[in-house]
Image (cartoon, rainbow, N blue to C red; front, top):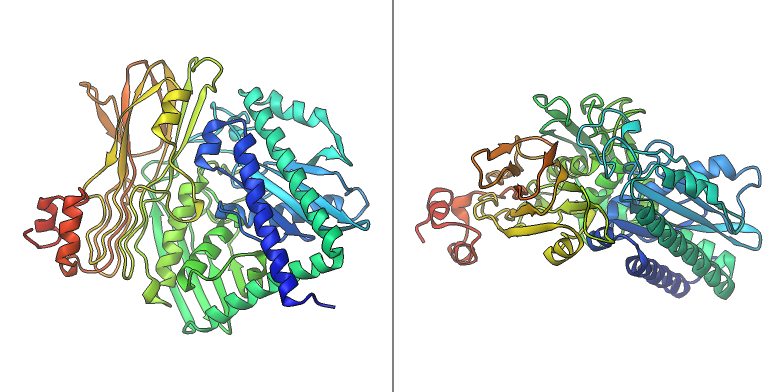
Length: 554
């Protein structure tokens, strides 16, 4: 008998609280300060087939688990080798669906009455898993073997017994084994705790009630999404956008394309017109494309929709093999995140043709900075890894937010205090860049810039996009400011580079990173004069730009 609605809601709230508890405990116990501060991790509870019940804050991890658990069930689920107390590990982009090799997942099955009722899982970035460069996230890797040790879905705990050889193998490939061991242990403990908590719910409410409540929660999300899709006008819409390059062939942009079809309460997303898979590390696997689709679809329909894998029932995906949105091994993938966010721009642009009231200009994307220090501070990591935020584009009825992670990552900008206490670096400036938000009736969010001074020798890897093709405005809005990376700041050798790269620097060297600003929405001349005055007072728009871009003398 189906549980009553009150029981289903109670269990949903319990699972949501458990997911929060898992995130809190990893944040408190994770070994890497830089990963914890950026919130580069996720924790989840899944049903018996690997479907996410409650989406994690790190949204783009959500679709990964179904691919990973599906592979685990293929390998272990049919011959009795899946047991209570097992924990699986994987970082494989192709066998496990992970975003890139640096993201490591742990999954534990939950048993009740001898039957699987669900799984607990977690994914977190690791400081170093081998590969050609420290930190494992190369700007110009040309195959996945350059990016680190590859771990297909395998057991690291078997029926409650730790398998130390698996851990030894992983750590033997890391330049930071102590740091990686600490994060692995914290992540395993959180995953095991999540499995224990789900088992406790089964003991309290009954395993069948929990299983049926999971099914009801999934079904409810799917029905809610289908109803919203059915409100859209039927038809097709297309959009495309260009990445600056793939990190290897610098002069050749890479096209991302989507055609969306709405019919009968089903949304179909066709990515077949995207460019062939790239030589450089910008390729995506379907799990990442799915994350972009569900994020953009929900954002275009309304904020009350809550993602879980039940939504898959009314969404279809079409891919062409060996394209940048459906790459095949051994294509490299470590620069996936900026591609995710460009793909979100493209999908949102197409979705706006179905629902203009929720249209949004292109955002500033995401980028990354890695500094491998020659020595580092005593008893601290030698690897400084940052996710660099940007800004949102303006939309129908609202300005874009400035200086924040954009769209589906929900990552945090690492505070100056953490950087300067953990690493031999000084932040010389950190401020908003005026006039980088695209002009419009609703202005794009402004970019920020940071200037770094190295206090010892280091190798710097900068990965970024939207320098050659800055974030686009829509409905008459102007483009946002492009991303910048300036090397040798304050010297006669100062220069700006427009592509990702690796740089060997000396103590005392300075460089500047600037994120991209969001695109504008609507005719700039129609911007409210009072809003523009506030922009000038807050330093977002200069008096010159108010005159030249907005046509107003303030």
